[in-house]
Image (cartoon, rainbow, N blue to C red; front, side, top):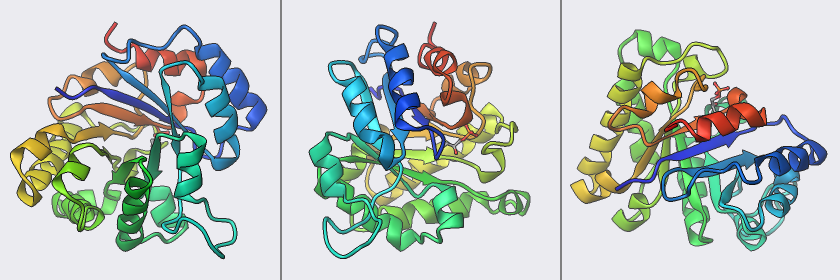
Length: 251
Ligand SMILES: O=C[C@H](O)COP(=O)(O)O
């Protein structure tokens, strides 16, 4: 049984003061963690504030990026080892904004996944196609190619406990959401890809999120799809009321 995972991805949008106010507003409003797991992903500069505010609650914390080495002469990078020492639980990697603006490759993403796992963090591995790839009807092979590359050399046990986020680029921040059927089709394909690479049990255990203009108005029908186990939410996670509504999509 996969526990649904609703994760905010704040991107580069909040400072520590705003972070502290937000997380204070969540107190007593988080869902039962056996029903829905709540996560917030924030920039490195906000993580300590988020961790302090989340202490003693069921809120889990994600980084938005990490390097694949633990330490060394890598100016400006974020160590996965330090993230683990701080108490960060998840690491979002491979987001299309990082692939696009910062030229991250599939190989980088695979190395980042391994570095997170080696330090005890759970990767949230993002994948998704451009509008052009969708229109060319090549999204299936594109997304399964991204997944195969990201999971290279990982064991079945490691894959079973990580999270994959399907985020069609054309739906990110555009207000245009994939239909539940479109999202389900690709999330199912991702699960099949994992089954082909590993086995049915691994595929049944891996959690798959949808991301791309998910909001309170559409979360319920997206989450009703059999292969969608959660959401990775940008814009609609920035206001506490909206994020709380998303967390309580089950009613
Ligand atoms: O990581 C989150 C996604 O990029 C979705 O962002 P959005 O909800 O603003 O479309």
